[in-house]
Length: 488
Image (cartoon, rainbow, N blue to C red; front, side, top):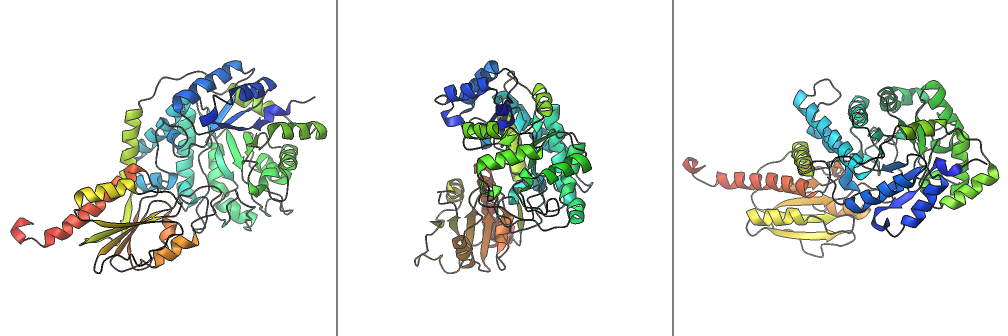
């Protein structure tokens, strides 16, 4: 009887890895392919991953979503800016005009991510994101993408693939055939892309093709209906026709893995059925099913034929031993410098009497670093903070104030995009003497017509500090105009 455990990558929660260790060890002894890691403390996770690798009869695939570096998942790792911010920091990437110094900084950041992952015991990173931002209303890609054109996304993605490979860490390009032209979060339900095959080949498929040529050892298939690849509407992740296109037309012989099988994007299928369809279609690995044993039991009854030769070859290439401790302090410095380079602005002018309004679209209190920094350097600064659903109730900015609106709205799965509340709140603050700062997707500010805009791409403490520096300088510049010429 076939061992279907080797085709499955279940979830591993780092926060409970100690408590759950007997269960993980049991799966390892049954031949599980590996795990996808979420959260936890670096030292604890690292120790238990090492124990699991020592227990395993074959190298385990230890994977994680580290699009923003190890700090995205593990406490103790370094947070790096999202893909869009990296592109902004090295503006010109993919056009042939990228400067040597900027390219060096980019490669150094990718190397830092790989070094930290390897130290933690993670040997497979679910990145780069190869989706092109062709739809500004996309609720799930946005800042996770390197850009809006195929050349930028291809260039940046291929650099990540190459650098990760140089450091012995496997990359995984996602989400084939491109999740950028959708308005639906595939965590919630099945999106559909109606582009013709010719259009896909000319644009969306380009970054994937080039990443394959650059040596990407793994590609993640999206839960998306793409009639150009499979007219039946079956999600690409479960589609034999889509897999055949990749194997026969694109000539790719690397690992194919589904997106997480607990997502609503699998459409009308129950998880076990979807997993069976994926394996029958020729997909190598099933990612993140809710119940491993239930899936394996279902497989044993159906007995789909599976070719595990690619999995065996891939696993033998993986890192399993410990790596030297990285220079985390240096990596933090590299990240901070990229953050400061990435921030951009349009229409910004001097600020006379700043008043800060915080809009938190995620029902979390964010903006503390920004508030503290501005209060320190702008005495008497007034501010108002609203979380999703809260209204101003008459607490309006003072007359004549230059209103700085800090918008916190993270791009993440299961959220479904920015809320209607956020857009209503922003519309009510769109004055000519306002400045809007997006600590997230820049596209959120598209409806803003009167105010100046600052794009920070994410809500990290360093990003907030950098934005505060800009506001403080603009306020100081205004005060300088009030001085006699000889004192300016």
